[in-house]
Image 1: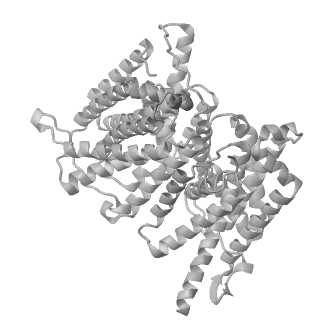
Image 2: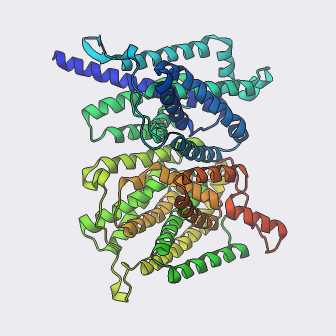
Length: 289
Length: 329
């Protein structure tokens, strides 16, 4: 019985770790959508760029340099994309946005292949986080625990910034009604730009965090995109609460589904998504009525 | 609503003549390229019906096509139906599934519709991938082509099969035109312009959307069965969401909501793909850049751009030749 409990704790931790990784990605995507009504399918590609940058820097200067520089590099990529492309696409319909960012996926995918080749790169977990930590009676890899703690810390920081500070109030006002927020003297354009950069930086951070867990391959951006989209559609586009709820739901369904009913696991999550779309077409925690 | 103009007839005639010329003159490789174009053309025709005329931007048509291929393979090799019956069965299955997806997604709009169809497409992909009877990752082989030897046609010959696909494309095109000209098609265009108005007029909006989606699925299933016959081997990769994305790219490249444009797009896309992949392994990069440029140019694809230019110069009579496509889908 004891071993049984340990097994479920282990699975819960795994679910939590997956959820936190997805949260880092989906929060950027969902807030960008909520604020700018912009659908960025290339968000997953930015995550792949982050992972590659982290892997490239890690081979020279160690893991932590990559960990801190990858978000900066990805935010810089995001700035280039914003100024060159996305600013022009703001007023277009969702179809044009989907197509342009779909084209961007192709471009970024092949650019990473040209720069780093087709073979997957492996990156070592940092020395500080190697080994296992005993938690709740089971041994759990320290690095995975670090991912969970990092995700929760970022969630707490974002919840504080969005809920308790003036900038947060401005962002919420912008999500709610950008024209009205602009009338009240908020520089909505600059706010958009800042939020877009932070969203990109978080995608880069997610890439750097995921790099030691998964192998760094050109198609990793495509593979993570669908789960991220599922998370934000289940949660409701534009809200922090939706992003965390969606991430947890996805992580739990995916992990426990694989344990309880391996045959049905991946179909289950899509069925859940379809059910959410039918019953609550705007997601579980929509920002707008 | 869909109308033929002189210019559209002209482009159709050029495309048809080109296809016939290619079918009779090309060698084996040229015929393979032609067949690829013809099957893709049927798929994008079906996609343009829903996306161009109904504003239902679907990211599950690739998956529907894959389901058509699997349905054909299952019906012909496992159930043991004759190939032509399996073809009809595959179309019916995909049409029914598409009707259900359309009915469920009818309430969603814009990005939510795109996501919902994406979800259904991925659901189909996972199901096929994980169910042992479909061969999982290994796919299925040993698919047969219909036997038309009774009327003296051997479909295992590439040239005959290319002509078979061409006949299929012509039928699919005529069917799409007939649907779009019918009352149902006109209702769909009305919904695309203003859903509230059509609802106020007493129309059951979701039924119209579901019916069109189902009919589009029927054509998509046809394309899928042809794809299975063509390669004689199928794998879950057919259902991947990037296939749906590429189909959408082809529609945009050609011209959304023109029905003729996507055919032009299919020709351009397949030729571009073959020419580029011969030169560089990074042909996706070029396709991505072309796509971004086409969307940013705000022209309605290659065909839409030509049509607008010609409409402006009044070379041909232009009663509603340039159908303006609202961009706020």
